[in-house]
Every structure is written in C-alpha cells, then in structure tokens.
Length: 161
Image 1: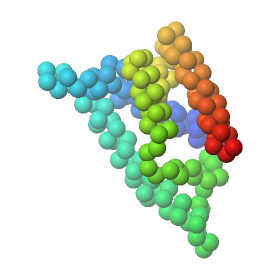
Image 2: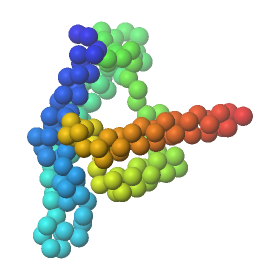
Image 3: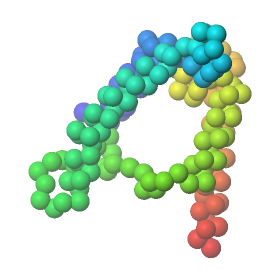
Image 4: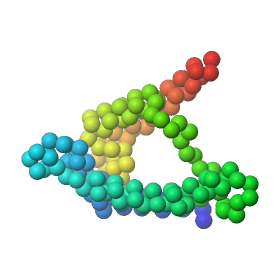
C-alpha cells in the first residue's frame, strides 16, 4: 500500500478520534487540567479515559508488533519483516532518561499550551472551522518549530566543536 494513503488514513483516524471523543474542544482539556474542579465537582475526567484508551491500543501494538520487529533487526536469522510500513526503520528514542533539553522543551510546550488553551493536535483538527486565531496559532507554532530546529542545530554544532 502506498505510504501516502497510510499517512492519510492515520490522519483521518486521528482527527475523527479527536472529534468523536470531544478532545478537539479546548474546554474539555482545560476542564481536565483545572484541578480545583476536584473541590467543587466541575472536574472533567474524560481526557483521562481517552488517553487510557489510546495508550491501551498503542501499548498493545508496540509490544506485540513493533518491539519484536525492532529486536529482529538485531538478529541475523529472523523471518519477521523488520521495518515499519511507512519507513525503512523504527525511530525509537536513544536517550532513556529525562535530560535538560526534554524538561526545558516540555516547559515551553506547556507554557504555549497554557497561554493558547489548545494543544497542537486539536488546533490542527479545528483549522477546518476557518477561525483566524487558530490559523495564527498554527503559523506561530510552525515558526516556533523552525526556531527550535535552528536552536538544536546550533547547539549540536557547538557540542561538536
């Protein structure tokens, strides 16, 4: 099957899942993150259930499908096709412990999420609403991704020097 069709199907499933679960609505996510709602009964646990469902599917697929193929790449006598469907190899993290870059990046991500009130995935799904503020958010996010990539390249070249 063509990689573009698989990528399109994946995106369709992701977007439909966000919309059907209500997670494309910023109020659902904010209702989960607002922990003071635990005190007055307004806390919305639905994000936790969506994440638990998604993780249960992903963890099952990872341990039953991906992990055996990653291990088979290291053994020469394997009958299992070892590559993913849309790439020549799996790209698993090499760093196993949180480092300063991860913590700093997560903090910046959280700050942007808190200011905007919406996560990038739902913002992308909601672009279909033609809301100008979502378009500006996505433009700013792409600019931030570009600046982040430039920073990574600069820091990488400094580390090698």
